[in-house]
Image 1 (cartoon, one colour):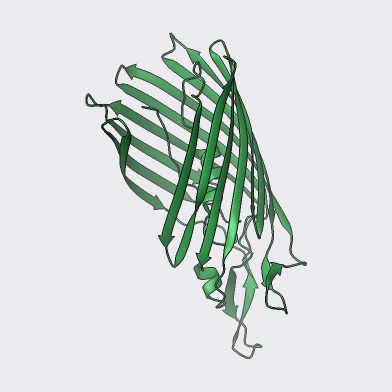
Image 2 (image 1 turned 30 degrees about the vertical axis):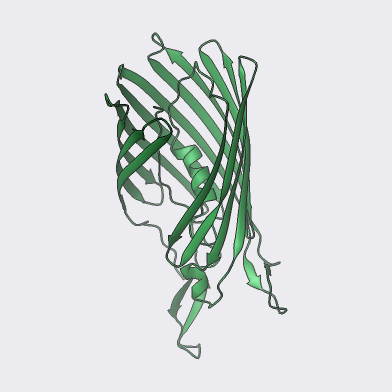
Length: 313
C-alpha cells in the first residue's frame, strides 16, 4: 500500500467554481505525499474517466498517465487531463447565460535516483477559456536512519493569467479585451515519512504558500446603496488584497491490516493572512477484492472560517 495524502485549499482567482485543474495545482503544493526516496516509481500506463455532478454543474473527461523507467536511475512520466463542463455555476446563472467549455491540463515529470536520494522535477500547464496557469516544481528526498525515515523538501513556482469572458455582439463568448490580469505563486514544502512498525507509517507535511497579483474573481460583484441610481443601488467589482500568505500542516497515519486492507487517518490545519482558518479530518479505508479489484471508501469533515479583510467603498 502506498502512503498518500489529500488536501483542500482556497482559491479566489478562478472565474467560476473551483476546477479540478486548480485543485490539482493546490494539491501539488499543499498535500505532498511522503514517498520512499530510494525507490523509483514502477512503469505503468493508466486511463481514467472522471465524472462530477453537483450544483447544476456536470464535469467529466478523460485522464491518461504514462510512466517509464530509463535505465536504473531515471523515471519519466507524462499526464493529460481534460474537463468537459456543461450547465452553469451560480455566477453565470445570475446573468442567465449557461455555458459549455473544455479545460485541459498537461504535465511532464522526471525522477532521478542517486544512492539514497531522489531528485524530482516537473512542469504543469493548464488552459481554460478565461484562465491559463503554468507551474514548475522541484523536490529532493533523502532516506535516513536505516531507510526508516524519508525527508522531502520541495519548491514550486506558478505563473497564472486571468481573463474575463464576455458575450460579443455576434452572440459568441470571447475574452474581454479590456481585462487581463496575472497572479504569481510560490510554495515551499517539507514532508517527513516515518516507518513505525512493519504495518504502520506516519507522515507529516508542512507547506508555506505566497500569492501575489490578481486574487479575486472577475465575475463577482458587490451591490451597495446608491440613491442617485434609478434602482437605488449600484454594482462594483470585488476588492481583494493583492498578496496572500498561507500555511498548512497535516499529520497522517496509515495502518496495514492483516487481510491486505489499509486504514488511514488524517488531520490538517490551514491558516492564511486573510484570516481564514480551516480544519480537515479524514478517514480512508482501502480493501482489495481478490487480485484485480480495489475498493476505497472515505469520510471527510471540513470546517472553514471567514476572511477578515475589508475595503471601504
